[in-house]
Length: 290
Length: 252
Image (cartoon, rainbow over all chains, first blue to last red; front, side):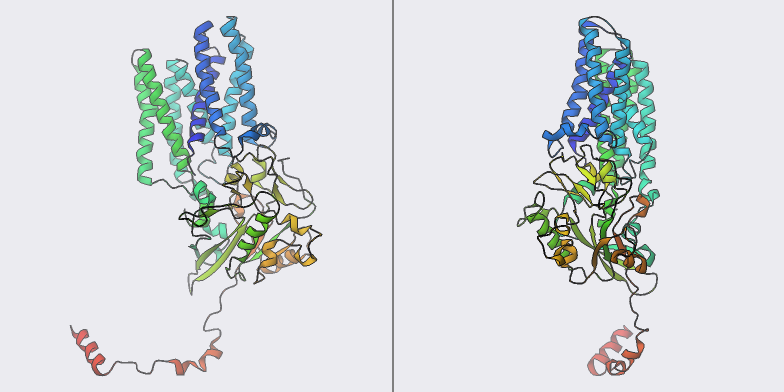
């Protein structure tokens, strides 16, 4: 799959933003007044910034409001609805903390639930696709949720939670990588089933339908070199898991925490780039690209 | 609107005969022509005369080589367009309701004025039947020429999809699969019409007729043997200078 920067930024930053909102909603850290204001600004910058960046890949962003209508069937629509509910509820809850010094626990709890639901619905947009076997796994939502919560705990300054969640997300990520490498093969979809010609012999793509490129090849047939993908996985894992956990184990300082956050975000961006770049869409089979 | 209908009254679709298709791409061109000049956003080309040409097509013809375990390889031309699936994954993922499957005839369509161009439906389609137009930024797909098949302004013989109308080999057939007596239902039953990627669970309406096995030389031996002796090489071994050269080189 083509790794579109807008979608990579959106999923990473909105994930971290909604993760932070989840912790704030549950009262970790229990802040009020200006320090609460600072936390909420960071959370909203990440969550809303991510959502805005996601509209950059739309062909007609001016019609985006229509995307709230099909929540009965579409995970993308559900994501939009959950995000708006989460942001509104958390804004009310945040106003209570910042301006009135009151913690309206019920609102915070509802906001935390919808923040997590937003991340879950985002992950289901990818998980539901049988056409991309690498994503079509329960580990995909587990990965998105654990990344989001780990990033949220990190930004919320919950050191113990952050260390545990980063370690968990690291394990999930490694298993997802390993499982994903065999996913296309075990899906059973091959050029033989794609063409129905497998019963007569072995099928080989002989001539493509066109000499130039097209939307399908640009969007779905992106290929990342295997050698580089292994290197990138290692870099991503070190930045996302090893460095933050080691830094958090040191005595706490804001500067060390900042480096841990930057490292975590860089590692997560690399991991999300790989999530798209390594994903094999079955339509590539028709072009002999798998 | 993006939920799928439980059942459609008719199941309009195509039968594509892989035994008959000669790979001329006439269906590709007639499709592009009709769908650029008529309903909806035109199918754009970008850099059409430059070094990196690209364009939107709703129908494309691949070619595959099938090598049996014994005998000659066979070349199969393989036209591919929307299969108007009964369980169309492209429809249910649509966040705006722009994509829908019609209850009356099962055609899968895009309401272009509702399409936000997110591309998710193309991601959900295993067949590559949907293409985002690079200029109009909306999703384009085969409409089964919905503006031809019901069009009373056209002569009756033209009220079928442009690809079917134009095919010089008669490799494409249009009809109603819900009617067991229709031409397409009969063809599918007689020739073992098959689904593409059945494991994806999309239940495609369009069916493909598998190519028949090729004739082999031995089966038609009676016709060929009469002339065959005259076609055999006369000189089996080289003589003269070439003969000497051949022998000398052999010895080296």
